[in-house]
Image (cartoon, rainbow, N blue to C red):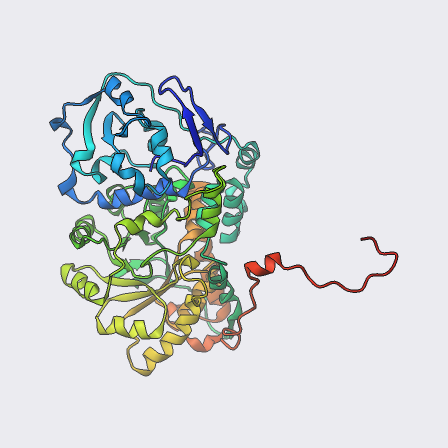
Length: 557
């Protein structure tokens, strides 16, 4: 939770910064790509740092575990220092409060070493770089809270600070926002300026990443049949999704750890989406608390909430109640994560931070979610959620026709055809391909008006949005694209991304010969190539040595 796993910790003295560390990264300054000339310390940001605080932010909605600092007598600086890595108990100070993290060591997705490194110290600097200040106090049980820190103590240095001069130079010289002509431009800039840890986490898929690539490639196999001599003087792309009016048929899908790319994280995404009247879906694994992000609902931002169902169903029901109170417009229950896919880009980066021959970095940065998430989630739970709230319930992560029909039987308000951005089961089909199979069946059974169908995964162009709507989708979600735009340019990047998509949709609607979304029909598409999938090179191919042709006598060896 506190930061990046390091390899060997020999000795150090809190306050004096006398660290005897063997690390695989340098420690230099980082300028935030979004802080317009203002220098911010930052560095090698490991995704697990964010996710723990994110889940803590989600669980913090349980008011029953709120801790009363007035009931604890407090801990002196001397007592805190006595509980360092050599002690049987691991104590850490955060923002003037002291916590016992002994039992938490085995749960930390970044490993126990980083917590031990800050044991007996004030870890506020590294903690506050990634988390809302109240995250820890609301996540841990009351017995883990030891009281306020008594006395003055220098804050321990943030050992994740990175000094990548080449990256700093790229940030300083990144293209102006006006040079962004499509969503892929944001991805290009983000790749150049993000710390490797953040890029590995954002961009990675599961296993050979075939599904992740196929999500976008499938759109490239769908072609248009445009109409001509149609009056398209006035284009209207506004729509309603789950009863919420929005300016365009796309939304910002839930994505964890937006703070990895920008210090304002989900807050700048919320503000940017709100200014463009685009719906934001708040992630259960957001790097800001639900309370902080949902405040933008009061400012006019329409928001949905993505729910990871807790093993303790009471917490999930309390979350539904909190969403109602905050003005959230819909609940998206994620159902495709009984466990997380093996995301090797993320894993390789984490292993690269240690010199140990035997590393226990075998779990991904998202794996902490599994410590509270329930793999036993079933349709009966969906029925109970429907009864527990008046908000629309959408099942997110459906990947086959039969499950869409089941969703209709259980009277959910919508489904999202999704494979988690290619981060779960590799070789799962692209959502746009599943959509092409789903809608004819629903029309045949006269069920197309019984449920709203959404898709996410692989959308990069306005033409992709139009293709999905022609097939019958109500709207589409984009996750990574908004992360990249936010990472590179903050709120302004989010606004620009929305504007680019809107412009592309409007232009392509005119060229297609339609002026309203309800005119987008399947007959405007040529699907003959959709199921002709390319052959993807596997990891085996990376190691394959090709056969060679006969050599001439004067050929060099």
